[in-house]
Length: 580
Image 1 (cartoon, rainbow, N blue to C red):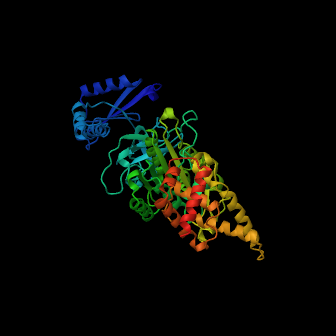
Image 2 (image 1 turned 90 degrees about the vertical axis):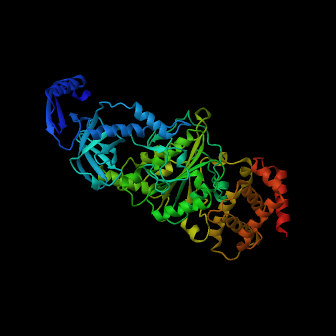
Image 3 (image 1 turned 45 degrees about the vertical axis):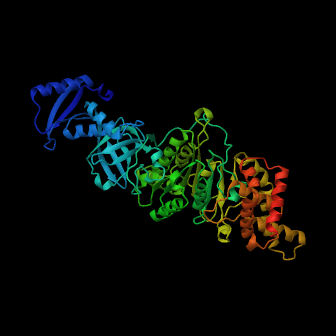
């Protein structure tokens, strides 16, 4: 309203099928004078499409009192009906309709200047804000991403072929957001929260903004509870805690997604809400992921957010923010959440595309300079909240792709500086059969032993040091075939450790199983077996422990410290099982 306060003339336009009477014109002038200051100039345009009622436009404000406008006002009121426990939705809608009253509410209206490639430039919305949702005449929504002196740049969440230059666009005064709720568990949705799994509509419990300030220092607490992956090589050497952000990085086809999926599968039955965000992937790949989650019984506690390669670039851009908003809904209720972004390299590419289409100057390597801020404000929202804030947590596993295994080369988002560590997957290890192909030297977790149980922390011992020494010795001894017995024993020990760290896809190990394997391996109980038999020996050992020594397994699972007596009991049990 204030934009007209310093103008001497206020132009008001009535659009209707029939001209207003003198009495109606006087009422229009009185209404405009009450809401806007200045000399009122009222004009009328004939618009036969308005069969009932009228549309009053004052500057960029639009008062739609046509039949369609009044129906739309009622529709919006019904859409905003809030759920009440124990009250049927039909009753709530009926009550809303009975108490509904039409209001003369202004809608700020602009016009489309240009449209194409998923981008629209809009004129006339002087009060619009960054990140606000706009609605075009045909119902397609868009989000403001660029504010210029003469126009607004808007990314579209639909087919730009349905929008024409000169058509009207309306402000919603609402920041971009996504519907959330417990009903989304077990469902596959797009970046706007709409179901795409042919299982019917989803009833949302709330509406969360896509972008929100990350929790402050006071609202957080230390990361000290384990988020176990079920992968021995990670849980033992690079533990992940609840509320941590651990990067999974490596070349294409090195098992990055498999590690993330195995981590999700390992949360079965422990109450952790899992969210898998697929960005720019093929629909067939996403379908395979959903199939794996369903076969292992994990879809009931998982939400899959999909923005495939065939979706508009703006949907790929907002997908990780949509998934994060859904996760924050559960985190704020005191629950633990695990979210996987697969992958942020494609997300950076989508943002680069949007920036170039909006006419922003490219930065280093043709990526805009704010790409770092883009991902830092996304990942900072993962945290372990303080007890006063409910104690919930959200753990992030972002995935990023490298080129030719060069982790020191340019990565568009510089995400290594944002996360609390990285798991680096090496192509040479992967193709040699070492899977997960985790590089022990370049991987790190900045939380470390704080995210391990007492038993796991004690059982890990010198594993990482032993593996590092083995790799150095392996490189050195390839130039010399004449090895002494001590060196041969050390090589055999290292080779057996590497074999023990191999795991099949989607076969996570529990914490107590990992402790048993580590204690026996570091106690040199498994190094004398042929390498091809080591994994079978491990399976036989774990089955024997479950069948014959359940008390030992229970002591470990219940969080007891790995005392010397318990360690000796595990070694004795190992001898008994493997001697048969």
